[in-house]
Image (cartoon, rainbow, N blue to C red):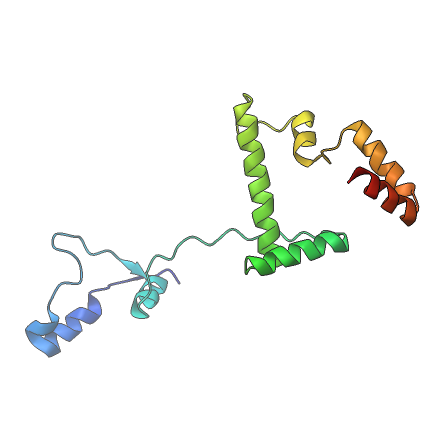
Length: 155
């Protein structure tokens, strides 16, 4: 299947029939004509690059269970940015890890170092202090009427 083909073979046949008009060289002046495989010749005949780019990395499929609220947020963001939910998730993950690497580099870590537990907590933690978490938990335990009363009191 990878049998070499002479790219000038068809041109030489055309030269004999067409005369000088078809006798223009196919290769730049001084260049040595290369031998093409059958596949390369076919691609060239179809007007394509005889040497196609290397194949793209095959994506890894991964199933994730998301809370409905988070799924809806992703769907809304994807719709806003006019892309698929998958593209939105991949973009956000890449940005978060690139940001984490940049933050780690500022603190003296190199881009190849894994993040410390403190860095991971700062990135993915809830961002509440212990007292704030206690307040939120206590607030959630209140009835709706008492929650409204607390909100009225502090706002």
